Image 1 (cartoon, rainbow, N blue to C red):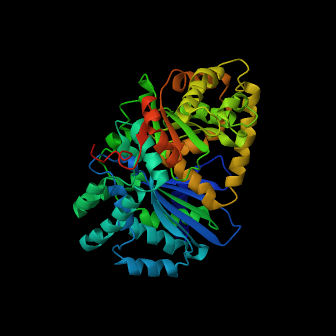
Image 2 (image 1 turned 180 degrees about the vertical axis):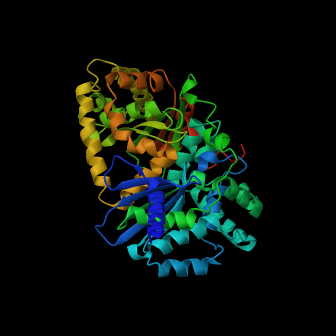
Image 3 (image 1 turned 45 degrees about the vertical axis):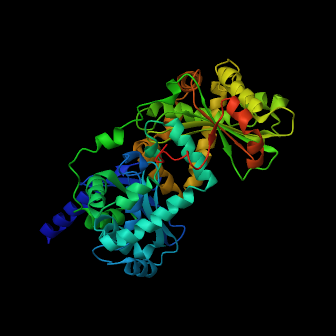
Length: 488
């Protein structure tokens, strides 16, 4: 009896030994022996559980020859595995689990799969994703069928205004490696894809030491860990080095070039009297410039303040015809190897001043006045202003904790673009940022740097004034030159 008691105690201690405390109440982190990271958020507000599995295998891990295959692989995950032999059986199991919403996405920094189920189905839900991610059948016939689905998406994107805009932007802003931001990929890669190529992706990237599980809702973290260790513990880690794919940075920084690239896009969504202006520069990367991302985030909070100097200075210039502060914006977005800084504005096109001249003036204003003013003593980035950012971040964190899904989705994004420690220690690192850090950020990423400017106008206006745009140095952005994989 005594021997059995000590054996049970030993097992219990083994299970809790892997728990790592976090600085957020009711949130726990475990790491399995095979490297799989597990994050658990306890929230018993409803008898539901959110389960997500994420893999660092988004567009950023692509090469020109594999661009698009990670997205295709994501589709194949739902076409059958060692337990559920085809899409019909997969769908039937999802119905049995009581899944109301499920999906898989391929983004820049990750591929993730998720659903919400009744908490009574926790074990079966964990088993479902284990079979899906570890033992997909990758059937040849299903692959040929799914190629057509993915190709139709790519063809549809070629006429989608938002996709034309973003593809043209990334092609020019990250000119040496635009495929690392294009999860849709090259249609030729899709057409020629083989099962062997998908298996290579599985063996190299779909491994526990490159993946993480996020479980939250009406659960107990000890129970979740036991189940995950039971179901995923024998998942073999990959001993191959993933560093080359994960750390391969963009080798040609456009910020080091002397001139901005200026693009004009004839966008059917624009009315004749509106000009959409956007200016983008490369920003800090989560993987290589982590310390700079904190200053960039604080800058982003403060510069996008409608009562701040950036907005006030621009709105004073009546020639820009910007109606009010709702039509101006600035931001920074953290990504693993493709951080982006952006400025935007919507201007009326009612004056006698030609659009190409007005937008040139606006770009010059940002580069010669707005950005240099950020280094002034009264820039609005002083320490007294930075204090206000703390409250906004705290409010945002409190709001995110209201649902397990909302919280874990944010954690998953940070895990893929940086790491989990970045997420858990984000608040304290933000509090370390001072006005000097922001000035260093402005000097390093904005002052005397170049980027890509995109101006969107009504098609009829552009047609009438194309010659003038050409003469002013604005190159046309359209569906035939926006995508990096199109032949010149």
